[in-house]
Length: 154
Image 1 (cartoon, rainbow, N blue to C red):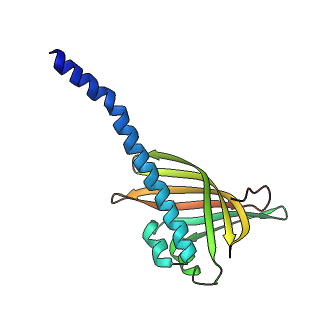
Image 2 (spheres, rainbow, N blue to C red):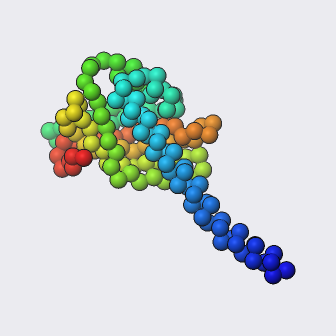
Image 3 (tube, rainbow, N blue to C red):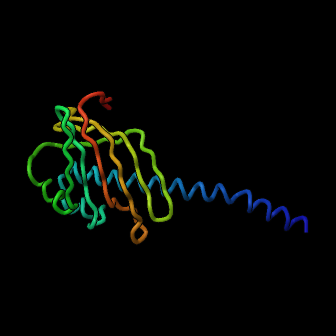
């Protein structure tokens, strides 16, 4: 009886560690999906974008210039197709991401910095809505700000 009690006690004590490990794996997978989107942007590869997003989602932005804020939104396919235009090397870097996960839904709130041909362009906040589809994390929606002041270049 004592042996069974000790075994049960060990199993109960180990459960939070197992749950924590699963959460950390999901967190890493969520961030990896966001990074795959950034890699597809850098490669200007519409097919790679579509492989990491939920097709029905959107990408939207808030751009403030000269005191006026402009909002825009695109479907993923339209945005991805637009990557073919231009030859600039694009790079987006995440900083201090905060990830929240519940079931098959997750979000990332992260600062970012953006570079064109290796030169700093702007910074802002990215807000990713993530969905776990067929066992893989994908980007459902992303909303971002475009800021040119108060940026930390990283």
